[in-house]
Length: 112
Image 1 (cartoon, one colour):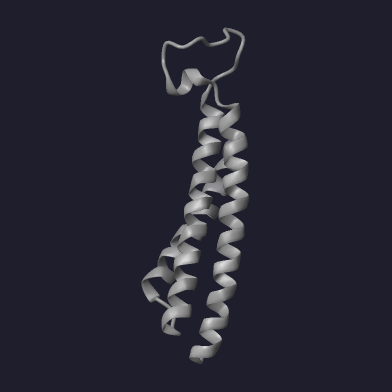
Image 2 (spheres, one colour; image 1 turned 90 degrees about the horizontal axis):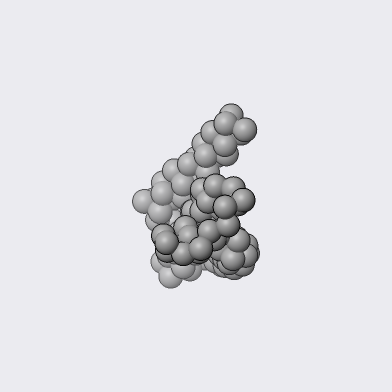
C-alpha cells in the first residue's frame, strides 16, 4: 500500500470512527436515562415493582465498549494520515476488540 492510499484509508477510518462514536454516544445517553438512580446512588427511592437494574447498566457498558472501539479506529486513522503507514499494534488491538464484540454477541445469544 502506498502512503497516499494509507492516508485515504486513514480519512475513511476517521469518518467511520466519528460516526460510530457519535451514534453510540447518542444511544448510550438514551440508555443512561433509562437506568434508575438507585443503581448509582443506593438508598434513593426505587420502585418496588421495577425489574432488576442490571440490564440497562450492562447495555450501557456494552455501548461504552463500542464507543471505545470507535475511538481506537479514529486513532488508527489519524496515525495513517500522519505517517502514511498502518500501526501494527493498533491493527492488532482493533482485531482483538472486534473479536471481543463478536464473542460477546455469541455469548449473549447463547444465554438468551
